[in-house]
Length: 377
Image (cartoon, rainbow, N blue to C red):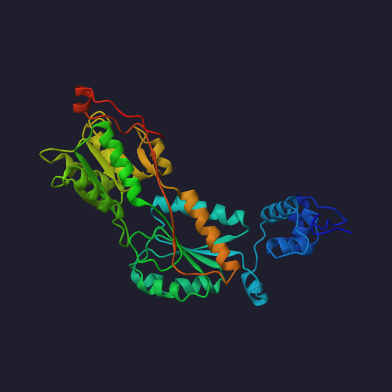
């Protein structure tokens, strides 16, 4: 007789997956048990992450999860909620689908959730204020176990009010300067900006400008960090050296054109996002400015495209994997243990400077022989 540790292997053995796919249009736990070669009760305990008297072997759990994925099994949230069981769904309220940064975040969120046996339900909060009003009720209608908020939502006050009164736990990420209302996982924006500026100064740059991509909500941490640092180091930035811009390629292009029209243009440009930085690179090429010989450019986020620009973009790598892993871990813990505190608290990760080919010493530094200090990448 099998045990939980052995996975209660079905004496009939595991059924070939191809045959199973033909035999059932809508896979059930019984189908998973047949494919994995375990009992239906074992499948139920694994998928529901239910406590067991005898631990289920890791290999058995993996076999069940693989069979569930291969069969395309999807839990029935309504049936689970009637039993008071976990729905194995996490709701994700996304700030802006159009931002390539959040596309990367959503992919990472799906991977982390699936690694824990969960699926993601997406909700979009970008657009008019009233578009987010019923979002929380929609997510809860699907009986999600927890909600992860991706990005600052301060321009959605009614949505935030719904989240405050949500029956399921809420974890926030990338909140910028928003008031701390939920358990939050974030990045040290100031540390990233300082790392980039210190690197440029070490190369010999003193005329450093900043292009600030305008983001939804109230997120000025990167611009404020630049202004404060330059004030402390150089007594302030020259007029026109801080350029607000749309968070887009076109915004970056327009900002650089304005900077190069100044009487004393910068030798280096730091940007608040990689998207803006790529626009700056494109404008530099269009205007005949060689990067990095005549202009150094630094981004922030390290999107996939950053390594594939010409020249490849020096940037601050956002710790997306770490932030998403922590937020999903916290959301699952809060969902599984209602006794855990939902009080506001924050976990912060630091970005990392990634040096590529878009930065170098300014011409004056090269001519005077200023040496570059080694930088860890």
